Length: 245
Image (cartoon, rainbow, N blue to C red):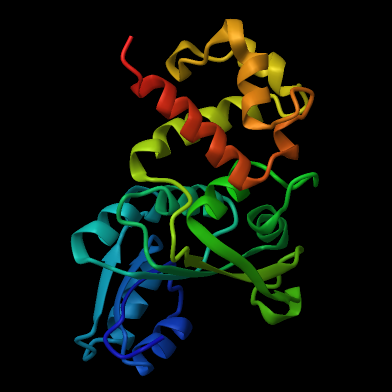
């Protein structure tokens, strides 16, 4: 964190992290859903001009706040239940921050950093790794929290890739393709392509040939493909759609 960084903090709670961010010279926009905690934060930081406090739901407002205020970093001890959805909304937004540092339950951290072939590998990891370099920094014991949770947590960092794996016009196709395939993660790709939604515009009569030209095993399952392979797949479909009829 550097002086002048424009940071979105989701769920500041009692303001422990908020105080550290302000101490680093950051300009903080914090969104807190709990009315009592929001009141406490207003009182605690009443004389702090670098804090903008929003009382509201991060599920509804995170992306809008990033866009409206030009925020470039996100820091959060994410709430367990809606945490994954908040992350996906932020990661896939056209105003996604340059870096994200979050505390999440360990299961979510494993999904964010998962590699092909493991059970945790799915949409959360594939979509995150499309845009970011993702790393688990530290696993945290339940004893570090109050009230003490029953599960372990982890700190995860996401740093925007210096070179994008795909151009923005291909993003929608990438999301649609991977969403369709991971809904049936145990099926073979050739079968999934044959039953793909019409919106993906996959040539059903040549699904086997398409996979062969991409160098992808037709018997592979969604969980076997790397993020780079999914990008190549989505790019090829995009190129086919660009060819005049």
